[in-house]
Image (cartoon, rainbow, N blue to C red; front, side, top):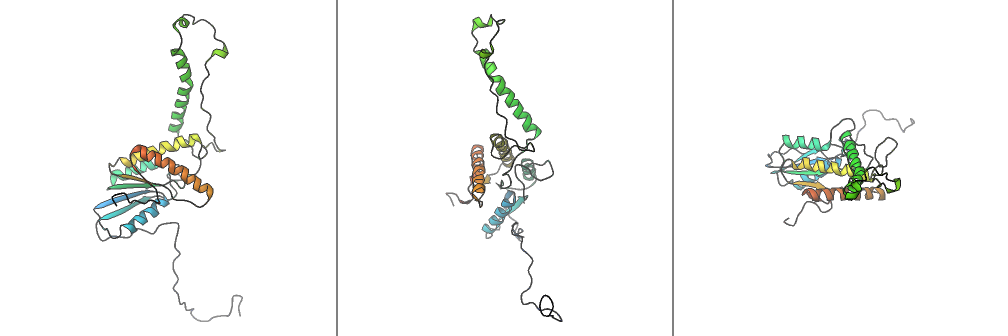
Length: 256
């Protein structure tokens, strides 16, 4: 006998044919339809959106007139569209919608956005302008409230104790790399603006838009993060006038 059992001579017979390994992290590829759809549902987002698109394909399997177009990119989000590049989802979405047919638009992303965020130069500039405006606001208010007889005494020295205090926003909590940490106030301000920009891009097609919330993720901390993000998505979707969909409620409305 050899080290691994008795020696065998001749071809080895297999009762069960070997199967290719299944990649469970990715949704099955779209099936080719023999019928040309008359109504198109474009699904955008990350790997979760890819599975969502697959689920919609299965749900509409008996309705060949409805076509589902998957436009997902794994590991993308509103923090970054890709690891190396300057692309943003709101720019990509606007380009896709301007070049392709879509009767309904569905967006689902965020599972990879539970991390720190780095401000762009535009965001930093706007934050600095807002900070300076808030700092100057008390001084402007003090000038407006000054009495007429005080104007004549402009050469009178003002004690330091009488100088109105300036309101300065606290510096955001930053990590060692300079990025703003997840779930801080400044992080939420930046991320909320990116949600708004993405929704504006989705609405540019002039068709109904659905934003689908994230499902529950295993782990107490992960679940709390998902709830936090879904609250942001829901609030911005409702303000923008698009439909927010809880993943557990599905797409069925009161009319069926």
